[in-house]
Image 1 (cartoon, one colour):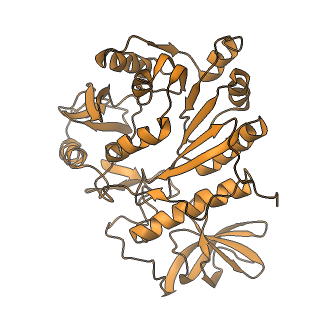
Image 2 (spheres, one colour):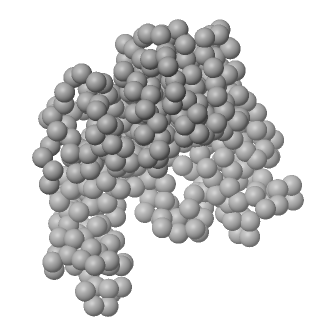
Image 3 (tube, helix red, strand yellow):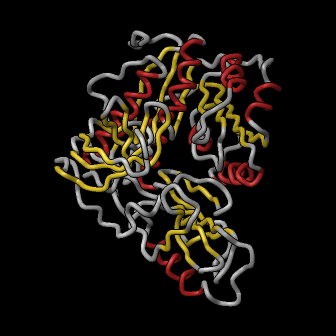
Length: 403
């Protein structure tokens, strides 16, 4: 492809790949097309190439896919926040199922059953209870980064925010030009709870206060400067699936955060150990356990790898181990540490199918078998998806031939 910045092609989108891009082929090249829908026929402009792979943007929709809808957000395509608004909701769910299926087959050599399904979000819009807003201190623009850039897309209304966060965004925007705006602040974390909004750093009448959310039988406290899941309407079924009917003597919760899984685990096991590297999140986890009146759980403030290395001589059998790592997945030494503990059952909660598949391959090679895989649409209007995998030492699962 010569003069790639001006090269245009007519292609048909075959399917949606991990990462949310559309797949097409032309001129002996594999084409990755952003913001596409499966079966779109489009004219694209090649933005860059790498070997025989081209990355392209749509400049004309010649024949729209049956799955394509008109994105309702005026910032779609420029704002980097959502990349699935061009798909009807059922098409979004199907694309995420195929993304998980593709990653597990290609990386972990595992075949999902044909009837594999995904739990839809109760709210396709206005579900997001957490946001990270970017600020340009010179132009006073407030919103999210533009797609593939560090420029701020000035957003007056965000269609995926819960109403209380949308009201906060409007309040911040109204006060952004005031002299009280804190110097040097380029982004603001915001999270909504049952009794209001927590902001970090605090400003414009909003404080970095503790808020809470009732999930099932328990209430969790957290703040804007600690992590808590964004789609609160799906948390109860997510917790139920991640823990299942597990019960016994000892359970471990790695990357436990504010104790989302630690608290219900304490109702099922005689002894529970939570491990969290963030000191503030660990304090919230302990507080949430105390609020639920559980005294059988301990929280260790330490990096997961360090804690595992220090507890390889743990003599007491581990009945259940849950891990909920960040999007990058977990490290080789952590997988090795988990295998060294040899828990009877592992529950892996992941927000990235590719890193999940990478880690799952190692756990399967370490002697575990796959019992179940379940998906949850925690992030409507984006390609991101939450997956819960259960591993045991007895029940087999179909493993694909390596390709």
